[in-house]
Image (cartoon, rainbow, N blue to C red; front, top):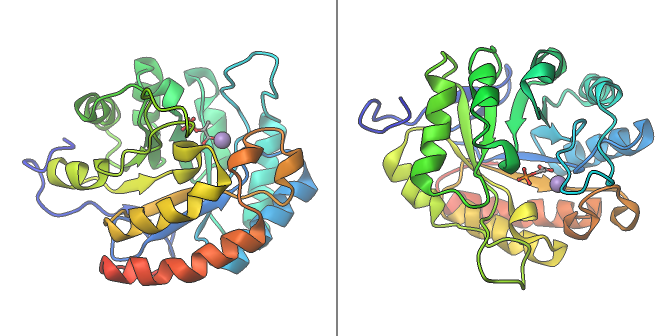
Length: 268
Ligand code: PEP
Ligand code: MN
């Protein structure tokens, strides 16, 4: 179902009246890794909206590597995201970590994110395949492109065709960056599938210094969207502070991004 052989034209995934992913606009999703407090998510939402982002990101259920790390505000976090959407008009993308809480997340979210760690959780993929919400499917950290497409297939074969693929870096021998962002996934996926492709340079690099250049490169290579971590106070973030942009830096990145989007025939 995901294959170019089945459908030649690019799929456009509708998110809201104003926002679709896969068309001639480069769609920017931005916000903190985790929702931490009302003040933090409102401040983030207003800042990314002002800079020109189209969608607000923020995790309420966090799939942390350590069980002792912050696990998210859960339903309270979802409520805060909905409040931030009311304030700004931005649709929200947030992660769903298990089938049991998927209906709850779908009540609040405009896009359901499947994280890298759950990208081959087939029970979860089938569950979101039965829901009527677009899905942002992240590539697993040791997944081949073929396996990635098979995970998309799990969602689509349950009836949900609104799948957006997200490259977020894969694990290699390199330790200078958190992951190795595979930008070649953009042309490779564009050749194999009609589904939209989004790049996550925040998890892809793990370092806020490297985020803007990877945003520019992804835009120039024809990505349909970017998902970027932005935090008003990264030094005190509950998760992923080192890779989060401060609002002012995100704003400067967005200004420059226009040129690269245009080079690939897209507008911001
Ligand atoms: C996230 O988006 O905060 C996240 C946990 O991403 P990933 O699943 O790519 O690690
Ligand atoms: Mn994160």
